[in-house]
Image (tube, rainbow, N blue to C red; front, side, top):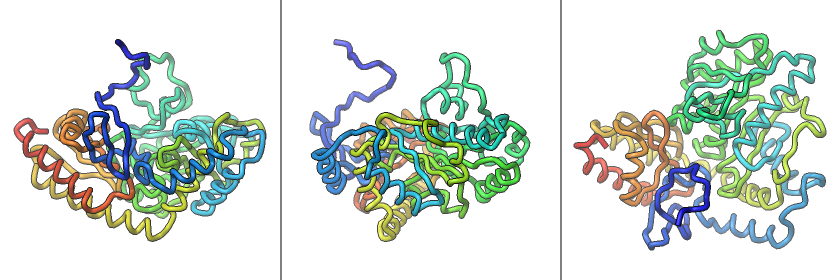
Length: 393
């Protein structure tokens, strides 16, 4: 019998029934080591007791009341995110795409409210990914994802990632903002080159436009710092978050300065489910863990172990892997074969990873991954590479 689920996904024939930490268990009883974490979503792993307790406690009190009223969890989470970042105010949605939609609308309203309605265009970057709505697809400009959806939403263009001269050449009197991932995720775990984010900050300031960092995949301690842009010592005007912020529960956030958000007044933007009490309870529980200095130091140690191991694999299997990329626990191996094929072989061997563009497989384990699990993952990759060396796995 054919599935009634709309066939928009190419899915592996595996049904997972439960998980614990960095492990997932399938309906047939097989155990998998999960180094995809729902594509960098399950920041604290599966069934983390703190998140389970927070969700269960909130579920017994209140699920939903709508944004027609003040929501206590929103007030707390927004204040914490502002305190931990450059920001002053936060809008909550349910996903990364919604967070980016808010950022796009905010950028246009920012200029319109100041009498500069002609500034409405957003400059993004080749290889980026910002979501699956029509506007966020246009912001990324990937022809593969835009195909057959009709005219592309106007107001977006892309420059080569890392090329400041190209950015400067594309800025004009209609530009409202620059939108960039400090580390491109779907684009192939490409870290912004040294000085690039600082250069974008300088260009944005000179042009009088906003700088938006999409930290949906790289944020919430994934890079080893709470937000990836901290590595470069550069603050944006707007930052979008999702994925790890909810630890597996749907939540997105758009963080902004008062100056950037000046146009976002009553009725300018809204979400029925955004910032609901359940999501806020879980996200606050995630921050309780990941914002601790000791936890961030633990992530850095795990990242160093994983990175060193991946470097050894590149050296040991030059016919299979070309290079290691990434920062923190957002790592990738550039393969000589299609990344989807490599991810499939690793899955068959019991290791889950996430394929990306540019022939890269992503290693995105939960931030609670331990040394033994890192070593086990590396051993699986090594074994698979040895078996497939003749096919350039």
